[in-house]
Image (cartoon, rainbow, N blue to C red; front, side, top):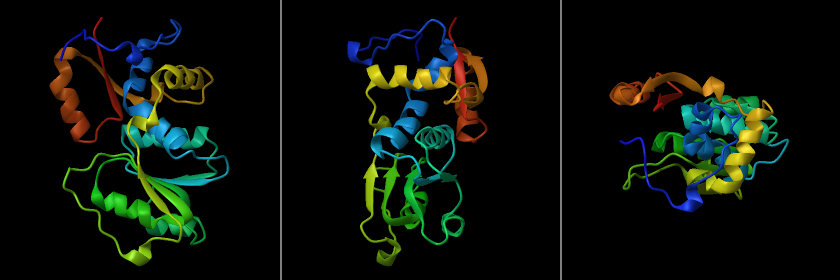
Length: 203
């Protein structure tokens, strides 16, 4: 880890000085990935329904993206609860945000007819996802999302504007702050599921 790094110009975005950098830092990966998965990869539309499987930092960001996109119902419950809450129909969009085969299967099984499951979490390379054929509703599709299909130079300013408008909650995503020397504790807390996001300050 270092406090400086070399980047390609396409990865650089000018940040409004009024935006606190510890909030803007969240858009570098997790929030960008989650919000983008809902808005860009899945193309969620106002009035559609969504279920999110795995609500860590990325999953919570998917929930926010679904809300910003106008989802009428957002659930983070297992399949039976999703079906019960949708009158047995399932959801238009299901997102897996952790990288577990079991949650991928649940996301697929929670879909409505013509629904879309977006796998955001990264599974081990040789992991298999198995499910009964009849668990798939007609005309459903399964897709993956890479960093929320982002376009850094337009998405980050847009998402920061959502933050400025109060539509994207970044303050609430920061569970802890620390220094670079706290990196090992930050990793431990992340793996233990104790935090949504930890921000390490360099100044």
